[in-house]
Image 1 (cartoon, rainbow, N blue to C red):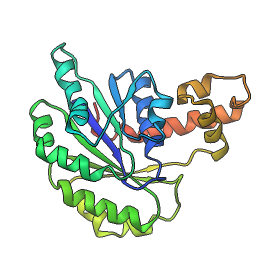
Image 2: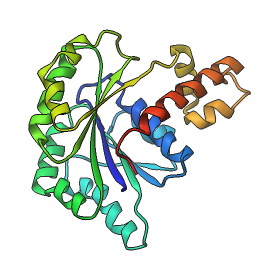
Image 3: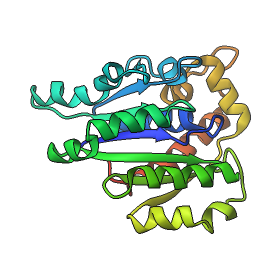
Image 4: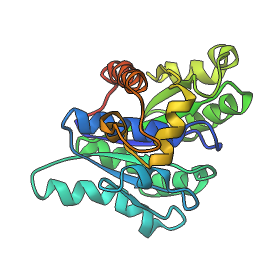
Length: 235
């Protein structure tokens, strides 16, 4: 089944765009069709790194958000069904929820065989726990919840692990995965290149090119993330 993946966490700085970029690279490397949408007006980092696959979308209007689901109508008429990645900027939960509820999006997607995944990218702080609780309360039964403990944004996730919010998500069949930290220096170089992860491990010249061991660490990081992604409900 194809999937629509909302990459969120609501607060800034938890690593949403890195997760979106990582999922994009996963689909590319696995030969799975996808379309990406970037809701961040200020940084547009998803579009910056994967410009051939992602386009900006305005979350303040239904007309803008309709483009996300419209992909499935367009592609199904041609006999194909892609995956969709939506990189959600901070403070987009309210307009997104209104659109999803008014459009009965989860039921609509189910009727055409599309899995709806809410990715909650979490750091080690209490805010991430509270926001997960709000996410589950907003959508309840229907979508899949994928809670990502982002070790690039913290090491002690005991608050999250012991929380009622996580228990509620798991009771609804939610998934809990870990995203390992990529060496900070390597990530800075990749960001300065505006490079996809594929480009970063295949570029060997230039001021921000990764060295041999740095490229190997990125490959190892990708391999570990991909193994985790294979356990999730994605097309």
